[in-house]
Length: 525
Ligand SMILES: Nc1ncnc2c1ncn2[C@@H]1O[C@H](COP(=O)(O)OP(=O)(O)OP(=O)(O)O)[C@@H](O)[C@H]1O
Image 1 (cartoon, protein in one colour):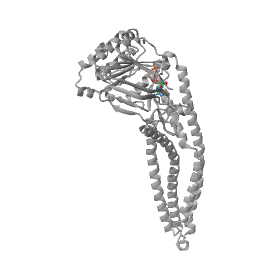
Image 2 (image 1 turned 60 degrees about the horizontal axis):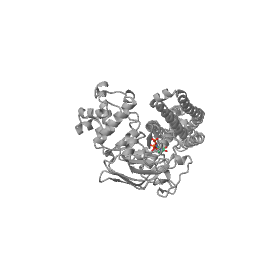
Image 3 (image 1 turned 90 degrees about the vertical axis):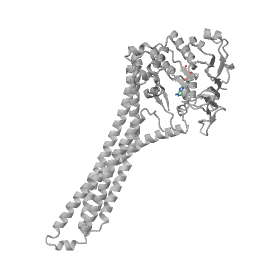
Image 4 (image 1 turned 45 degrees about the horizontal axis):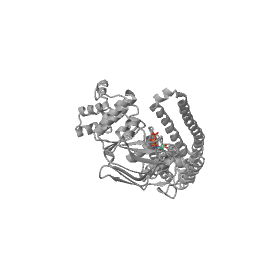
C-alpha cells in the first residue's frame, strides 16, 4: 500500500477482486465485528429455545400416548422447504452489502479529501466540481441503498407470509396429531370428562410452546439475512487480508495492468508466468556508510519502468544533486532508497534507514506541541532519553531562521493546528529543522525548500553541510548547485548520467556539456 496525496493507493491482490481503493479499512472491520457480535446473540438464544421447545413438545406428546416422530418430522420438512424457497428467492444480500460498504467508503473518502484540501479548493473556486463529485457519490450510494430496501421489502413480505400462515397451519397440524393419533384414545374417552381436560391441557401447553418455537425459528430465519450480510463484510475483510498477505509476500498487482496497459518486458527484470514483476533485488547494509546501487531499476507500482538500471555510489561527504524533467523518477529514486518501493533487480547497499532522513516537498506537521514538530518522528520521551534540551532545539530552529517562533506561538508546549498556523515557507523550514535535530548521515531533500527565500535556503544548506550531513537534493533551483559535488541527471526517457560538478557549473547552475539523450548511459533500450 502506498501513500500519495494523503490517499491510499492500494496495490490490490493478484486476482484484483477489490475494485475501489479501501479508504477506511477500519470501518469495514467495525462493520464485520458488529455483525459477528449481533449474530452471536441473535443465533444462540433462538437455537437454544428451539432445542428446549422440541424436547418439551416431544415429551408432552409422548405423555399423550402419541408417536414422537410424525409431528416434529412434519415441522422439520415444512421449515426446510420454506427455508429452501426463501434461499432461492432471496436477493444476493452479501454482494449488495459489499457494494454498499464500498460506496460508503468512497463517499467518506471524497469528504475527507475536501476537508484536507479545503483551502486549495476555495482558492480555485472548485466548490461546484467538488459538489458534483460529492453528489454523484452520495446519489450512487442512495440509489444502491434504495435498491436494497425495495428488494428487502418484497423478501420480507414473502418471508412473513410463509412464517405467519404456512407455519401456523403446520403448527396446528403438529399439535393436533398427538390428539388424533394417541394410543390412549380409548382410555381418555373412558375418563369422567371424556378426556377433555387432559386434551385441553395438552393443546394449550403445546400451542404456547409452538408459538414460542415459531418465534425462535422466525428469529433464526431472519438471522439468515444477517448471515448473508456478514458474508459481504467477511468478503471485504477477507479481500483486505489477502492484500496484506500478498504485500507481505511481495506480490504486487498493478492498476496499470488492470487497466489493460501492456508493459514492456525488460531482460534485466524478472517476470513470473503471469508477466508480473518478481522481486529479485538484494538490499544490503553498507559497511562504510555509503550508498551504492548496482543495476537497480526504478519501477512504479503500475509496473512502469522509469529507469531500467541505475548504478552509482555516494560516499559520505559527496553531496549529490539530482535533476531531470518532471516525472523522470527523481522522487522515485528516494522511494527505492527509503525502502518504500521494492528493489526488483540488482543490488542496493545502504546504511540503515535511521541514518537517512527524507524531507518531502509538502511538509508534514504532526499533531502536538511546537516541540513535537521539531523532534518528529521522535516522541518527547525519546528526547528525554537522548538528553536533548530546549536549548538544543532552539539551536535547530535558529539554523532555519525560525528562532522567533517559540515566543510568537507561546512557548515550546504551545499546541495549534500547525498545518494552518505556519506559512508554507515556515512549514518547509520547520521540516528542515528536523535534520538538525536527528543529524542523519544522509538527508534526502525532495524540493523541500521550494517555498523558502533563497538567502535563508542557502544558510540552511550550508548549516547542514557544516553539521556533517551528506545531501541528496532534488531541486530545480540553480542557486543550490554550489552546495553539491556531484550531479545525477535523468533525461526523462530512462537514461541518466552522473558527473562531478565543476566550479563553473556550481556558479552558473548550468551543466557545461549537456549530453544528448542517446549518450546518457543505461537508457531503456
Ligand atoms: N504511487 C505511485 N504509483 C504509480 N506511479 C507513480 C507513483 N508515484 C509516482 N509514480 C510515477 O512514477 C513516475 C516518476 O515519478 P516521480 O515522483 O519520481 O517523478 P519526479 O521526477 O520526482 O517528478 P517531479 O519533478 O515532478 O517531482 C511518474 O511517471 C509518476 O507518474
